[in-house]
Length: 230
Image (cartoon, rainbow, N blue to C red; front, side, top):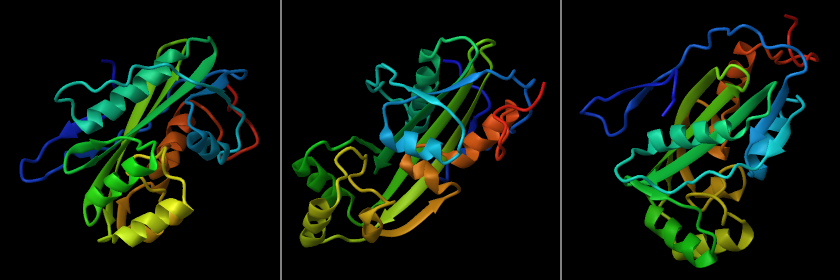
């Protein structure tokens, strides 16, 4: 498993590992004409990346997302983000892979896909603290250089009634969201508190970390130029 720039330090008095933020040291700037490809089939990640106002293509990666026994949620997110970035093999390309793993009481929350599963998930998560691990990996295909970052977010849900859950599921469409809610939409009404350094991480693509990583590769952000001069 090739993962760089992220260290994990465990404090046995804490439930979750601390994540030491990576340094965004400058790589040798990559040349103009380098393509940017988002390795994702998620419309949410594509919409987030558009906010950076730089040209990019999208490629849906085919990655085995089967769970590995005893693999921590944070390492699972980092592994899958890295594997998604590795799917892109086109030369002269920066590939972006991202993955998010959500848990409640240390159990992974999957996308519900059905109203019944969504109601069951929200009922189980009512009043609980949910952990979201969102990983980003950016790789320069030519050299194999990569940078990866992990963002931890904690969401505390209110104590929800059956009527509130039914009303929410009727009015919103969270069936493709782990946790069965969209915090950026009506799901915000279900939440008591959010603790995160990057709110875009909850939507699946941490733009603060991504912007820092892209700048370290020589991408001009913000700016009209795609890449800085060599």
